Length: 73
Image (cartoon, rainbow, N blue to C red; front, side, top):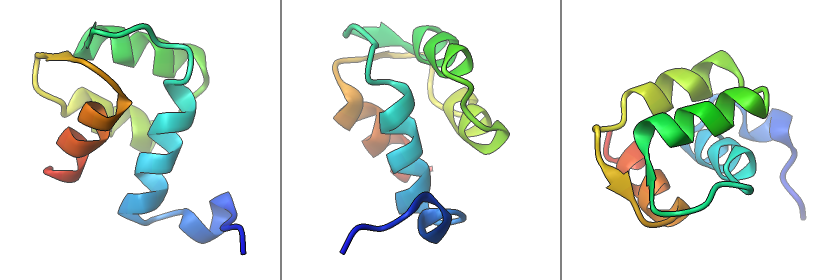
């Protein structure tokens, strides 16, 4: 069974899924500002943008690292 965006809304898993979808075109390594720029260009919602802004000012080597850092927050 496939989970819809509406079913995932409001969950950490939903937010992580949303982040992955917005970062599909990002080249790594990437900084928080790189990630934020791509997410804004891909029309990420306000919650996703806020979560990305909460990331540490670090370099990330892939989407997995980004999601792992978000999950720790």
